[in-house]
Image (cartoon, rainbow, N blue to C red; front, top):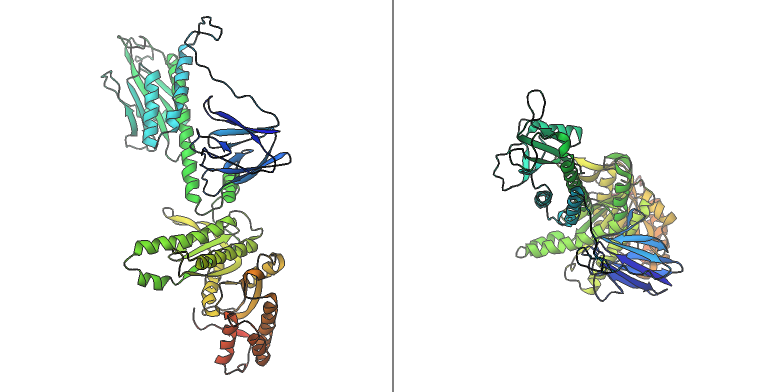
Length: 584
């Protein structure tokens, strides 16, 4: 028997469930789930499906979940655990075991009373008490809505433990070396009424050395004085781009909480408590910085690529532009211009529909581990081969293209109002390109640069003339013929085309769905292939005979028949087998 145990941050947040073999279970925050964790708001209402197979438990994030499953130090959308292993979602840790695990019980007793009823005495040093106060208030820092509130909550915590301080300030230390005054993030006012000042030199010393700097007023010979001013500065270490520090100050002697003739070492305990608060602030800022970084990248990268970037860091899958092998996919909505003209009274509605259509494109590309490079009105550009080296990019691009086509066809059949009237054209090309963060220092985006982008875009444009949905260059088609299973997709040659403005012709093929999902049979594809060969050899009579045997709804057939008719049914003198496209 297998048991899954959940442990939240608080002792009372414990639960366990028996896992039934071969019976899928749902884990989430909602009460109607098989495994319910209502205490963790980072767990979705229906977060993951669990399925026990043999001695392993398969986990899969359900659609719409925002937080991944953390297992073995990495984030996953799907993973497998065995008995004795743990995984985490949000702030809850789950452990799979082969026997039921007793839940921890929390009992509240009166202060100073043990479980057997006897009185006890607790000895805690002042430093321990202050550390405990900081720990108890750590949640307030993590729950801060923004950086301003984070600084405010941190200073409130310090106000509880540094009762003799007259000055508690969080500072922006970005310009500490300049003539400008340090920017105050939050100043916690105290009731002392003491006129306080901030020492720029102390801040610079703390930031430059990346360690706490302490300063106590002394005489001209460096000897302690009876009354004076003390201060220390603690850097807040984090991954955030703008450095922070905590500046604390107060008076000593003359009735102040700190004794006369104060020495710097007497402030080390206060500095230690402040360092703990600074450490918590730094952790929160680092997490927020990474979240913001990856949140902005989620619309460009699949979870697997994000995971690779996070794992490999700047020496691995970084964002620097580099030349590499790329497969580009260019997707464009048909009917866009007509809809804009007819929707002048409801542009917001049209924008919503365009966003839904572009969402289908980007979702399909990202699901196949692709990267979104750009949006241009009614079109989307994606690619494979960066930041992870190209493995099966042509096949991934074909699968994404077929999925996009299928989505639009299903929407048309189902009468989906948002996608009604939209069709899609797709071009796929492979080649060398520069990919990465492209642009100026102030304005940059993830993109690709090279002829392959132009070829993919031009192939998409040619889909309208040929009357098909997906066209690809020979490199992609060769990979598809070699590695794409026929139950996923098929390809057929269209011919050798010379696009307007291109110096070299391109061998172009169509990507088709599997036979059960298409009105073009495998026999039709073979007949069309023979027709194209006859067309290129100038055997146009035989070509017409083969084409006329194809289904009337095959628009690619009509494309070749029109081309033959335009030359009065005879190959022109010096026929090379290449179709010249007069316009883009």
